[in-house]
Image (cartoon, rainbow, N blue to C red):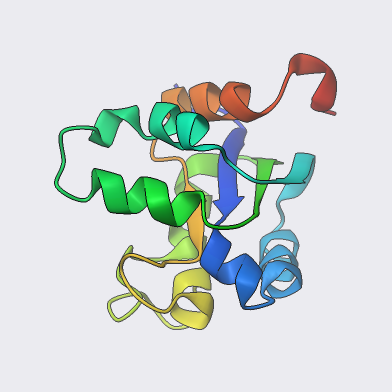
Length: 139
C-alpha cells in the first residue's frame, strides 16, 4: 500500500556541518510538505531502539555512537508517493554512488556519515514517524 507520508532524519554529521537549511530547501523544492519536525538528540537507548533491526550487524555499535554524538532533525514529510520519491531524492547510501543533485551527493561525506535517513517502506515510515512523534505533533 502506497501512502503519502515518509520519515526522515537529518543526521548529526549534516547538522554539525551546517546543512540543515540546504537539506530542508531540497526537500521542500521537491514538493514535500513538512507535517512534523523537531530538533533533538537521540539518547543511546533511543538510538538502540530505533536501529534495533541492525542489532546483530557488525556496524551497530558505531551506528549508535554516531547517531548519539550530536543533535538531529527528525521530520515527517507528505507528498504523493512519498517513500519512493524521497528515496530517489536522497540518493544511494554511499555518496560516491549517489546521483548528481541528490541530497547525499551534495551533503554526505561517507557511507557511514551519509547526512540523512529516509524510510525504506510505507510500513517503516509509519513506525519510524510514530517513534519520534506523538499524534498531536503531526499537522
